[in-house]
Amino acid sequence: RGRANASAPELRELLLSFAEPAGAELGRRLRDIERALAPTFEALPKDEAGLLAPRGARHLVHHYFARQHGWLIAGLEPHGMRSETSQVHEVAILHDRVPALIDELLSGGRMQLGLSLADVSAVAALLERLLMNETAKVLVKAFQVNGHNVDEALGEEELHEVVTSYLLMFHRTSDEVSDEEHRLFKELAQQDQDEYYSGLIEFGRDMARNFVYSRRHTANPFVPQRYTFDMAAKIVDALVHRYGRWQNAECTLMKEDLMEIEADVTGLVPLSRFYGHSSPHGYLFHESTDYLRQIGALEEGAPGRPHVRIVNYLLGPSNCVASSPYLSVCCLSECEALMGEVEGRLRAPAAAPGRLLDLVATLSSSTVDAPRVLSQDLDARLHAIAEKNDGEVPLHGRLFAQWLHLAFPRECPFPHIVEDAAVLAADHFDPERHAFSEADRLAFANATAAEAAPSAPQWSDEEVLPLAEPPRRSMWGDVGRVVVLLSLGVAVLGGGFRSVSDAVAAGSRRQPGKKSELPLYAELRGGAVPVRASHIRGASRRRVALRMVTA
Image (cartoon, rainbow, N blue to C red; front, top):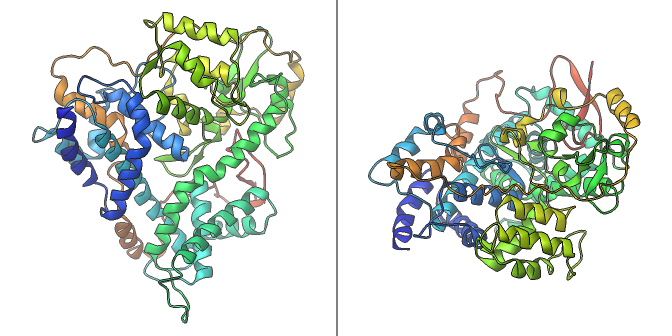
């Protein structure tokens, strides 16, 4: 414990030196993050000094952002139940992205094996701050597209317009969209009766109103209020943090939609129903079978009777919003909350099967009431897992995840072992390659007649312990610490980030007539004009793209 405590202040200070601006606000976030991480940290395997090894630290940060915000950060994608995660060969690539940070970590004897809770909390705070700084660049574009300079203070209605533009840019990305195309898109989105877009715009307005209301005691009530770029940045900071939970209402609607056509209470939808379903909410389910199979959403245990796993499909990359090259917002996993309960109560990496059975019987979800009596099959399977692992069940292994899938088939995904974890990255999904055409979708729906649920749940006895570290090699010390930090994705966000003040300065220096290179929300090129809102979910992201036609 002494080594863990001694290393924390030094490493934390180093990491946070890259997270500008510092101060009381960052200190509060750090404390909040540490409190949120503590239960899972206690439940993860650690070394004799109480430190997390590279895989455990990566797991902790990934699950923090996924659980809290539905964020999928580039470089911290799910591992797909593979034992191989980030490796040393990545160091050179990531070193090129943030050489200053890497040089500091390698100098002065800073490198030690493993991370304490304070270390991991600092990493998460750094990542969060860098992501928020990145949003400042999008906010600059939102000011400019509405005809405002970033040095200009806005009236309340002007502030609402800027926040609306920001949300539309945040929501959909593209390499180049002209200011005029954005204004047309925004105008049509505001006029359209589409429930999603009206809700999205109202969400942004509510966040702006909350900020205005929070200043009521400090603002002069006798003069019109004006709002600076820094004030707008505070609004979008809060907006980005809350957006994941707000948009998850769409994921819940989709889940309810799919449960209407599932086979019994299995969490499985016959493939023919999946492709043939006419959604009352306007969702289109036309991801190809190859895509579904790659991400583990296709169950093919019974020959001729393929089924779609509802949870695996919902958590797949086709249902993520890509808001920047570094961050996507995906459906929140209900299983993450259940695992958080398990970890919080046990505070250990493994437990006896009897204790787990008692605990899980008290857990409820959106579709499972508690307390309940677990089936004899679940009891037998959990004891069998313990027998393979010296009498205890590893909480973060594949077999326990598979057992949770049986206990909560509509909440916990089947732990499919992917061939390549890259298929779970948000940028993997390509509508042109991974979606059926309407004709192919209907043909497949009509050709697949077998709809009965599988007679027995799919089960594999293959265990994977993704947090188990490989045997240590000599010369591990310095290289090990590099891998800990780099496998967390600290450097993935790297050199292109600037603080809010840097973004303001960049906006002020913008050359007249020069297009911004910021990612925006839709492919608006070559005369393509959005004409109406279309519920496009799944294969073209969730129900949120404006349909494009050539003018």
